[in-house]
Length: 134
Image (cartoon, rainbow, N blue to C red; front, side, top):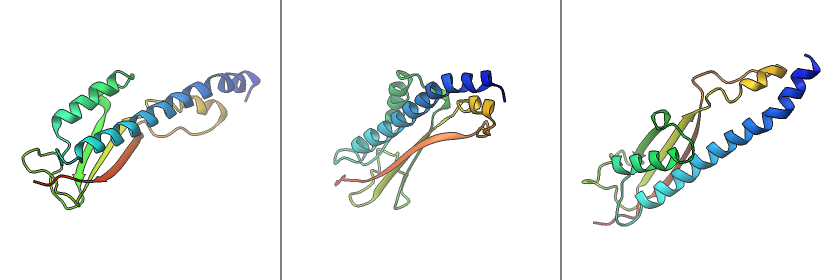
C-alpha cells in the first residue's frame, strides 16, 4: 500500500463518513417524526400519504425517493397504514426506513477494508404506542 493511497483515504474518508452519519441521522429523525404524528390521538396509523410526504422531505436532503424503503406494522398484527382502521391506544406502531449505502464504503478498499455488499442498506426504526381512542 503506497503513501498516496493512505493520503487519498485520509483526505476523503472523513467526508464520506460524514455523509453516512448525516443520512442515518436524517432517517432516524424522519422515523421519530412520523411516529409522533402517526401514533397521536388523531391518527393511529401511518398511511400512504404520510409515506409520500416523508419521501418528499427526505428528497429535499438529497435522498433518491425511489431507493427509500418503508415498513409499517403494528404490535398487535393490525394493518398500521389503514386510516379507516386505526391502531388503538396501547398497541405499538412500528416504522422502519432503509436506504442503500450506494458504495459509500468503497473508499475503504484503498486501505484493505472490505466494503459492505452492494445491496447493504442503512436503516432507522422505532416504535411508539398509539394514543388513538375512537
